[in-house]
Image (cartoon, rainbow, N blue to C red; front, side, top):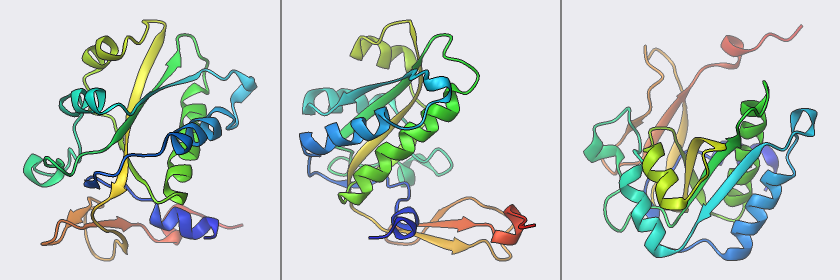
Length: 191
């Protein structure tokens, strides 16, 4: 699959089949994230990979999916939950570009998963103190987000924004996602 097709298919997924991510894939994801570009080669991004069923289950109540939707629509139900999480943090005093570096690392991680057939969802509404305690993450790291992973159990489609006043995603009757995108002319100028 070419890179453009990978990016068009790699959407946020919020319902998952219960297939675990293979250990070699988890390691490849983190390795690709680890070697992603880093300003001043600071390498301040840190990862905690959560794949043991017991810890994955303990993580579920500490994260919120699709906070733009009513909870009963956006939150995965029992049997639809992710099978792995990666907690992404950065070291204290990481530098002005550390969030850019973190974004590059997360992109490398989720694209590696997607190429192998596993979807992801970036989660920003998270219980940081509880996650820190559960996973013994030191205070010297600032937790920025959690990424959920699993084999997608729904579809996600890109659609033109058209005349819709909102860019909020929406669901159909089968709980498949539709993600409006602005036209190229609205976001870029080519000179």
